[in-house]
Length: 260
Image (cartoon, rainbow, N blue to C red; front, side, top):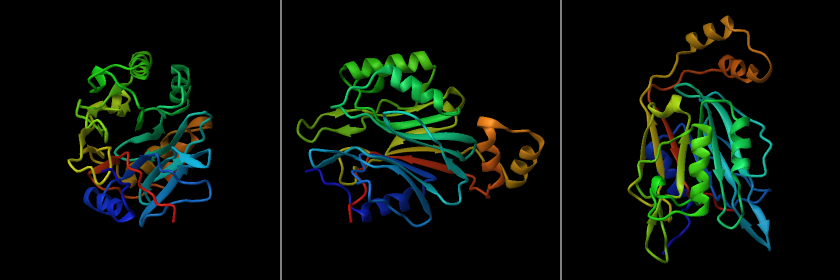
């Protein structure tokens, strides 16, 4: 039996991992609903209403103490992105590709072009491919393989399953963690051993690279002239706070928010 995790279960997950950011898909939140967690800022795109039912929805929860800005992206995909100062200044993007809605490689390429590198692209791609960790290859899986090759992005997944099919009791790896090569060696990727009442395993991405200090950020910001599309980086630096030495980014695929 697969149940949507309660708010209490998610709070426990956050308490256990103390993540810098939480990326979620299939939030199933209506446009007039939002979510709030203590010490976190919420950035989300509502679910799509279809025949009186809600589908999809993506969000990023990020610690208030982590300097960040939401990025404007022009895409038909369900995706949301933030620019944040973690151990490095990176872009974190949460994405959901429904298995029932067609998606082509051009849409993914257009999305990635809009995201300032280096990028962490985290989401439920509903893609099956042996090289992604599944036992079969689907059309979506081949598209993702081509996307990685054309954009020179790297896959953090270790090959461990991320999804347990509730009816067939079979495992697959449809939840993908994609990153720029410059970040590939910074992270340790693993799945949580507990489903937390869901059919997707939470994925934990950890780096032990020390964060830059506030004084170094301020000095660097003052020494570099940043204009145009890079002005958001200076905004981040100017609002920088002291960060912890060990940063954790928790990506999970939980249907995590109630509608109340």
